[in-house]
Length: 541
Image 1 (cartoon, rainbow, N blue to C red):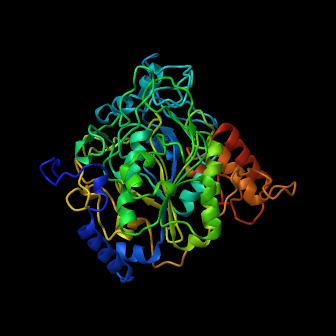
Image 2 (cartoon, one colour):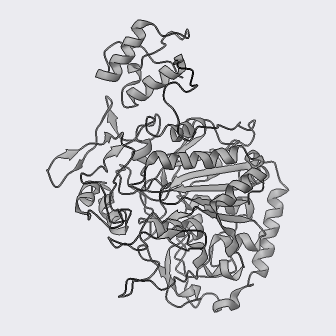
């Protein structure tokens, strides 16, 4: 890792006087960008730079990889034998070892997900603290979305969902790219995760306006709460990605949905629910607290969600886009999964129906694990992370089809990809980015970090849009008061789930477009009673 940067390294410049230090690095950035744009042949970043003009990051909330894709075929999901999990976590209250189980509920409770909970859940790589943390969390919180609160009376952190509950997410994975080793960049909760998302660091700055006074803050980068329960305005003085984008002339926008915040603004157990809007900086909207955004006059780039839909419709989306929902659409327990999936589907549909679709890449993820079980121990790259594994999906006309990316990734890979495409490979590096700060390392340069270009095939014929219903139906999808073979096969697939062996599937076994009485009986029996021996494979819908 690069060494820790000190006050003695670069010249120290205070406050608003630091606006335009970048003359030399800017020339390097622009020259690098020009070289990339002029070289449409070859491999890696130059090809990506010639084909992609829009990078769009859609960030949801609080789900582990195993809780959403633990039974996805081919992915490193929950270890199974004969369709049953082989792993379990001890319940301190009963002394029993609880295995992961299919959870069909639309509303979950989850568990604590601050820095102490991450340490306890990981437990030196044993991944066995989830139930204990959920049971020890406070109940009946004034705000149930607090990072240390678990709304469920009975812990549900060992539950997992399948295509039955989240069909659109599974469809995106089946048609595009699923990342099964994407880790939260920090072993902590939402605010640090969103700070890493836009700046590759979560810190607390001792001296306002001094980027060299900042120190890593994994749990409370917003500072400490006063006796009257309020916080002083945070001062995020270190360098963020928008600084590099601004100086290279790359457009960006951070779209924020109006509504309520998903988490408390600290790690306390109770708080009043706070409003969220583009004009209200908070844990999901930290950019207005960054000095660079003020210095560059780009507060107006933090915009309401309605502006995103208007830009998509007009085909005028910025080069770099971040989208964050409100609490109701976030999937943060106790908000409904189906509501969050519908919001994400509407966002992706809007992009796919836009003129910008042809040169866009969408990255969908969830900001932290939400206290839900995951069996993969995260690698350690520095004192801040990585955190636990979260789902990641890549959607693009150039995304590979049905590909499972098993590289080690984190949100740092998003910044690295943006930098490679739009900034000539310039990193948020205090040595040469033109605005030194005291970050402990350059996250984009960590050797373990994979390369997102592996998820694309820029030589392929561009993929057509996959438009999905925000609330997908199961059954008579064409409203003709009948069920087609494909619909019945899908219903059977969903009823059987994915934990049964593949030879348990039954339906239109001979592919003749009809389902015989025997085939229907086998499918129904499988759905009701499990897998009889000798069942025929189920045809794909």
